[in-house]
Amino acid sequence: MPDQPLTSRGAATYRRILDVATREFAEYGIAGARVERIVAAARTNKAQLYAYFGNKEGLFDAIFFGSLDRIVDVVPIDATDLADWAVRLYDEYLRRPDLIRLATWARLERRPAGHLVETHELRHDAKLRAIADAQAAGLVRQGDPFDIMAMVIAMSMAWSPVSNVYAATAEEPADLHEQRRTLLRESVRRATAAD
Image (cartoon, rainbow, N blue to C red; front, side, top):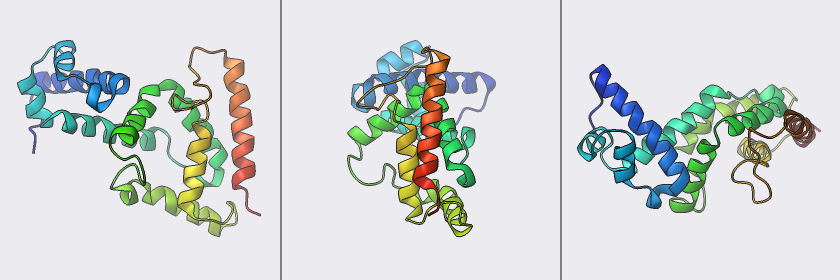
């Protein structure tokens, strides 16, 4: 088990490594990321990075799983209003496009098929229960809760950095984003409404 920082100075170094490595992995992927660039930009050394994270793969895991947890914390699901959830996801992807890029690299370099993470049951359990409860209450259409969740997430990513059509940025005009939010909200509402 890698060491965790015990001092405020160690915690600051740990945070710098995570911040720099997030940008490095988002830009270059797992295979393309270079530990030398990370430690130079984080003003530390390889020994410190390896003590905290074990290796480059462990560092990516810490960042990737942290990004998945961040999405759940920042954009918690409201299964009674999946359209609003989709719009909040859209907004988070605008704020943090690096989070989507990390997931894309994980898909490309690690798990090209099937669930993105091995612990998908643990990561999605609360969301799937919320959707199933909304279905039971007659608020969400019937169907596999996982498939409904996956569809809503995919719709929210229509203009994200993983889009094969168009990747939006936060710098675009506010009225353009509002048009997309309106379209997304209505589309998800229609797609998920109970029959």
